[in-house]
Image (cartoon, rainbow, N blue to C red; front, side):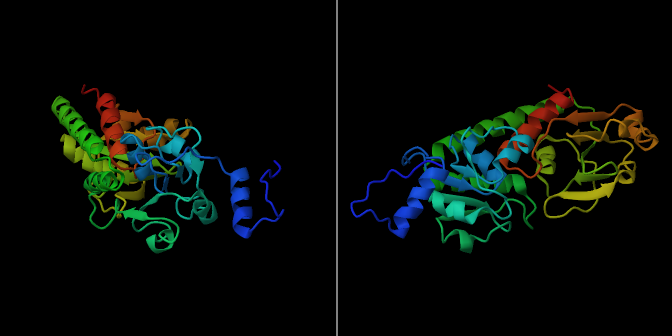
Length: 295
């Protein structure tokens, strides 16, 4: 363990000095905070990707290593501090970091009342009873811009994103019109199906492609069901978010019996964060455009 090298005239450390010394040993030392680059701790991946999209580097992110597998891009910078679980972060570490701002998702994880004891907190809604996550993600970006002085950058990002979605919507006119069934495997037999109230459903509406799933969904915009439910949509094109089922399962009679499989209407797309914010929506739109060959 590194030795403490603080020179104290009376050779005694106060409790506050001792805590500061420990923090200097065990925590990465962040760059000096500048007004235009606030120290922001983020408890939700949707807000982490949103910060990165508008040229803000988060100081710390909950479950940072897993973000790299699930969200993928925009990539977290090296040295981003891991805050622990999104639902219950390391509160001692969060306090020790002394962030200028904490970003969390309203209605999920630690309450804003507890977080605000540590630092100013923005608890922004994303997946809620309103069931319009794409609009909520846009509203949140504007709130983040107002708090961090990024108004022009956020406006430019949203304008560019809107133009890109318009272009994808024009390309989508070349698509054959089949509705899409968007699924992610939870195990060999169960899947999450994404429908009303979900980010990807909002994207499909924005670019003019129908979502085949018309069953009920929760506030996060998905339903968990068996593959027999997939079989009830014989005309749909199946979009599978990686990772897919085990290779052996792809040879099973159950899988081969699905109409989409029999007729070659299955597309596998790379990991894309289904509970994300605006950057995840844009990533999904671009991946879908390539996956459907509508460029």
